[in-house]
Image (cartoon, rainbow, N blue to C red; front, side):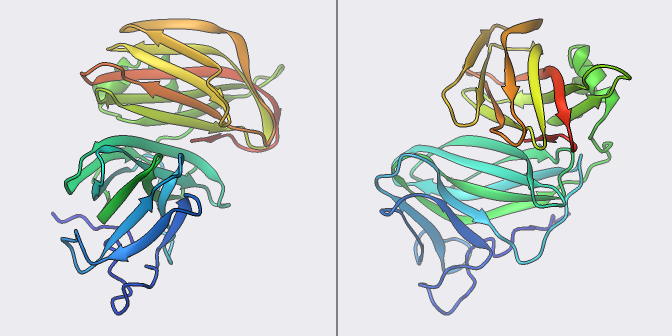
Length: 316
């Protein structure tokens, strides 16, 4: 079966009559005054053109992001795969992120992977599941240090799946509480969960969960929670991992405020200082890092309270 590529102008060939014109369906992100984005007639295996991002001086985000003319709808729980054929002038890191949006156009989630990319054109990619509340997912690909990136083509395909839709799902949260064994056994890979319990009295309880059956060696991923129209305070963590794992918690783009390093374990603990998110303030970022060479699986649950609720909760 041939899977449909849902990326508009996936190989930067349109418009075909002028190499100097910007390819529709894409927009530049990041960079500085020295950064250039252009199409070139080199390194392309899929048509005439290839996108090149030359970034000689900028230390930070620099790439391109999808801006399709027609929205491609996604549904929570669907499985997708993203791939790109890329190379660098100097071997280094390239990130590929999927930004998820709700019906109002607000960011509700982000999935991001980094790859060690060589000086030769190769294909890199990963699979992911659509998180709760998302109705659209847009790809961003780029670098975060001085280098030159060639992008030959990109692909984003919907996988065939018979798994249940994931959302505010008590069963999934219960499985994480139980150490994640139910998730690993049932194959519900890459689960995102936000659960809000509203007691008769007291503040609503919020649980932010993530399960992944394989985080590659020397790889990391980021989970981002946006407080939205409410204040949230996280103070308790449940963790199960089959390998050594490092967790880094930060609020916004500030320096890491909590860094935890655990061997393979199953553990539950309270944070010395709760992570406080203000209404419409900076998000909570959790970096999950595999410092070893072998992949591992993990389940993470961060528990807290909603201090003032005006809208549904959002996960990135």
